[in-house]
Image (tube, rainbow, N blue to C red; front, side):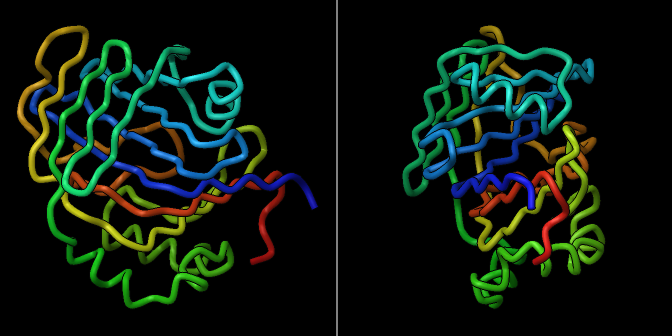
Length: 205
């Protein structure tokens, strides 16, 4: 059995009118301790990773695909109703709202089942039908396999986003889907509770 890395926390997906899309990871528990990182796809399609340490940057850049990696201070505050990000060129001030229809459906699945890699492999095709571009299980970079165990989703109702000091425009759907890996976040801007499992070998569930 190969190495296994487990990340427990939240993922936020945000789209803007300018075409900038951001995927924000807020990890309360991980092999690297608590941290936050941001994947940004610019309107030009350029993919940029903003990571807080060289170790995090190396792991994430091996697992996903980027055109540029920046190691910078990534400050994220996640509180009930708010998400605030200050990460070099990117700032986000977002409001979170009620649970989405997908979140309601996910709450009906016991967490012990919902985060199992074997279950996530089985339901991945269904996830793609419910949310085009999204998958729960697939092949990652570096010869790794990755599973996303999402157990809840709340909508993001408003976000002020700027890049390099310029407004990115009002909050919109995450379209086109981001292309960092085998899966995109759902099109509806949202904050997901997630347990991510990354393995050197395909998990046995």
